[in-house]
Length: 119
Image 1 (cartoon, rainbow, N blue to C red):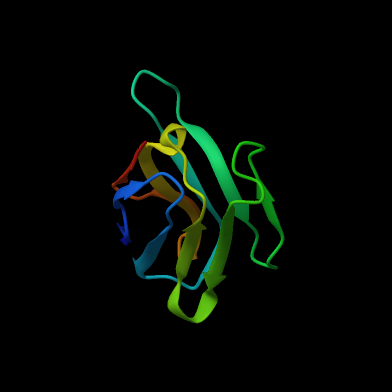
Image 2 (cartoon, rainbow, N blue to C red):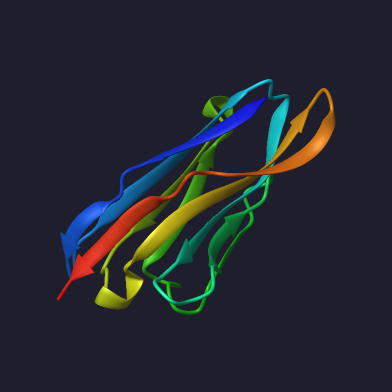
């Protein structure tokens, strides 16, 4: 069994910063693709940033240059550093991880963490 636990969300003023963390625990051989998604009220969930096992990153146009995704493979952890936050970044942020275990490869979601940016 694998669990993803997120932390770091909260309320911040526009222009501020937050750092999200997501720790994968359980019967894990390795973490592969790791990503952050977000879902604002009345909107579809969207991909924010992704990082491969080799460290290659990709970002949504709306956050490129402001957000940075990184990972610590030894800790099975993915981070999202969010700078110059805007009110439109307000959403529930979810981590999503491909985990390789004794069973093979499976995809998991975190429970979500709320980020609210006030103007």
